[in-house]
Amino acid sequence: MTERLKEPVRSVALQVTEGLVVAGARATVLVGSYATGHAGPESDLDILAVGPESYSRRLHRRSGLLVSTSSKTFEGYRGPSRCPKRCARQCLAGAGR
Image (tube, rainbow, N blue to C red; front, top):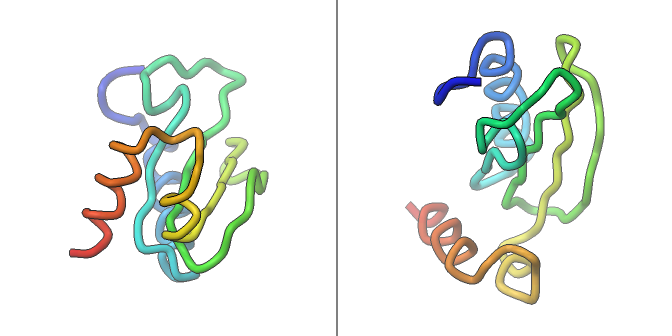
């Protein structure tokens, strides 16, 4: 995978992100193998959201890709998590714009 996401992965990521924003997400982050450039044929598309509700690993298929979404509230990211404090601070700072 090159630096930029290839179609249809990019298209699916944008569609999922738009849906999360419509549902109230203030920020989204692509994580996992697609974010690091190490995606293979069996990789899923992992997207984290900062939004009004918390849930982990909702799985669905979109255009043949397995998509995993997770969400936490702002408060959830401020508490103990596996996301480094710097990451949470940057995410929260960007969402306040």
